[in-house]
Length: 470
Ligand SMILES: Cc1ncc(COP(=O)(O)O)c(C=O)c1O
Image (cartoon, rainbow, N blue to C red; front, top):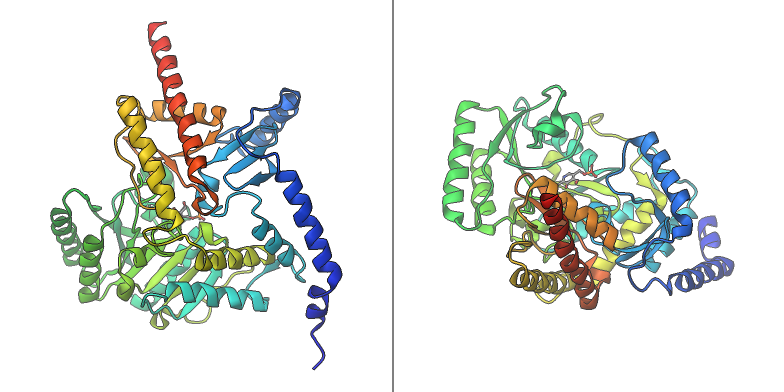
């Protein structure tokens, strides 16, 4: 059989040669990105003008961050010439850090595809392979997801999941979620997300009932309380509740760890009551001791629908056959770009083949190193940093100063200036959060980040004291 024209193209030796040349040029350009670097004063005017323009075009940026387009693992170069440790990675998107050679190569493969975007009427073999890859990871420990619907954002993955759940459970159209949950920013998800500011001025699109999240210091009491609330909601709204939506480790809410016994007790109750078990793994995916947090907590048997996003590059809703939507319910012009699909396959393959997971995997060892550093810093500066690393795996957060919004923000701004990019979570006390690219980090990187954190804490404390004196 003659080869497909696509094979002739992709296997052309000139293509391999061009890719090798790009890989070599990338390695050369990355060679000097070996640590934090201050901004180049000669670029300041142009950079500030760009920031102003960008701010005017899209609204003020959270940080003065405009990337130059290159980095090296946990380090990123900005357009002002500075190089910083990126410990937030677009809020958890870049699990392989910046300018990963494997991802650049995958992007080039994708860019050689016939279309930039794929979607409803136009999917290539790579999209099918990606669905297979995600399902294989999802079902590795006994979950039984049958289908995978690709999409462009975490919010759309959750929207599609909710639509499938409501269609199957109609006329039940209420949902149960947890206090402080974050689920996304569409109209429906703004109704579920437990943060008033994120739905200010919006119509109430969904009936949502909340359960208290687990307090890991008293799991049994948390189970009793959450079950009591669940039964009360079900009693008050007979036949109206379709599902419980689980964020197995809370992200935006403060990096609140989940608990296997707590989640299990609630999921068992869902099964007894005929409710769908929906796990939102947009942020947890790839960050615990297993690819999915439901695998980390041993909950595979309960999951009916699960959403993935962020680190997966292409977002997706995975679901059992009985949640299969009837024609017309879900469909999209775009499911993802072809480079994105190739990048997603590269990330999943590195996840499967690499040493990310388990007790001695990179997620665990990088977390342990951060934890040691944070505790050492607390011992030195007990009033400047808390004595606990919140979260699970590479979802990590800690409290600085008194946990107030302004002191946390002041610390984040100074950290950024000093070469570490982090972000906030929680809602009083606020916490500094890190979503580091553990797979491409060394323990020396962690120490370097924490050294900057230590000096920043002292600097901020001095500046606050000076302000008070003035
Ligand atoms: C748990 C969770 N669900 C949903 C979303 C929404 O994802 P996206 O921002 O890609 O729409 C996020 C994003 O932060 C998230 O953390």
